[in-house]
Image 1: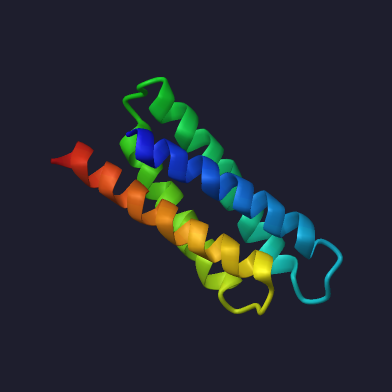
Image 2: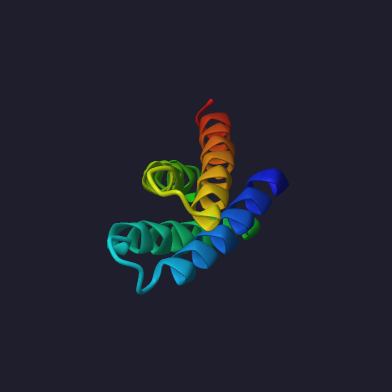
Length: 105
């Protein structure tokens, strides 16, 4: 669980950094929105896991969905911050999917 929490926190920082860098750039509205959604869900997911919520598995699944959508968007842009964000999102999605699967078993 600690790895998943850390992946969520790392993704949160990458998404906030990316969103901030994209604000005001032409054609980056979707990227900003996806990054913000992802950052919010990563923060919430980390908090739910940290407090041992019974709902964290479902939230991990939703967080993984948001991470995958954000990564897909960021991968369409040729900016260092977008590439870093996409990588963090992919790692977080994998950790969240694994966490959700382990709770479902």
